[in-house]
Image 1: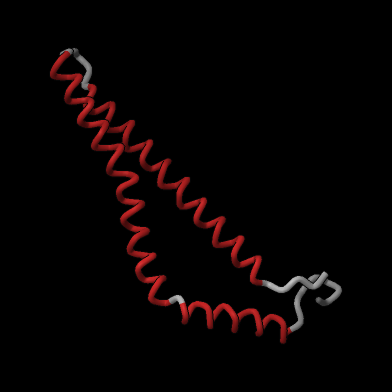
Image 2: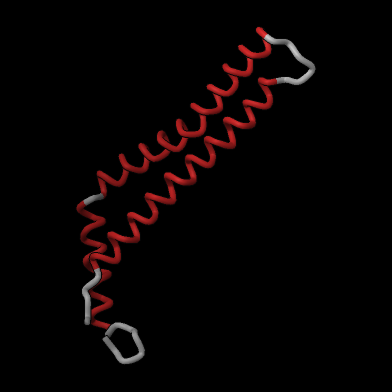
Length: 108
């Protein structure tokens, strides 16, 4: 490593080449992983929202009131689902960053 904390040009090129080769090897996995990601994120939002709606309809039918439990639980389920998806995506992002950092050579 250079004194100012930057890598030498050949080291940087080597790291980028390793990433490129790994991406080419994992290309098929990446496509399926990306499609699966859409499914996981979608279901993590849709499922709590639908459960909230179903519970809200059941409460509204059994205990009528001036307030709509269906709408309140729809919004609550949607908020919970979005938070759940965000947390999951954040964990995946941190995992990718950690893997990328582990691939880089240590110049200690």
